[in-house]
Amino acid sequence: MLCDTCLLAIPWLQPPLCRLCGLPQLAGQACRRCLYHPLQLSGLRAISSYQEPLRSSIHALKYNGNTRLADPLGVLQAQAYQRHHLDADLIIPVPLHQERLRQRGYNQAALLAQSCAATLQIPLETTLLYRGKTTSTQVALTALERRENLRGAFYCAPDSTTKTVFKRKILIIDDVSTTGATLEACAAPLFAAGAQAVWGLVLARPIVTKATGPA
Image (cartoon, rainbow, N blue to C red; front, side):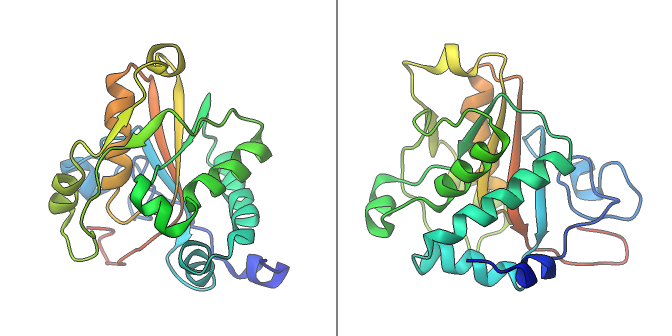
């Protein structure tokens, strides 16, 4: 579990933040990247940059089977939800493909979403969004290549789409977002089904600091 010392050592992203991607930037409003290539989301927020002690906690949850970490990390996401004044009718985790789920034994995003939803008392839906195809690793891919890699990877369950999604505000939970491509791919079928808004909320984002703000 995360002790109080580690929790206090996690540096929260501080404003000014881009109103779309949520990354720190100098001028306020939308950052330069979002002005030219806006995320296909209503917005994205993260707790911190991908650094210690959060990085080790995420790695332990995702790869080392330390599922107990999902509870305190999910509570942190709930705190971020409140801090950023987000508004959602429904919380959905980024789904894993069934093959990956069998290999890992659990979906870390679903565990985070469960903790976050319970803290916020917002309904959690884990059977609405599915991952229909496996994709190659995204580590070495550019932002454009990541989007192409994930095109059509997610879909909504057809029997409950209209009543569950139409005109609803949805929050998608994941552990880490690099370019936002996975969250965008998840949002696409939700928007197509009539969602009013789709936000992303993650634990961490890798951040490259430049004098002129994020590129």
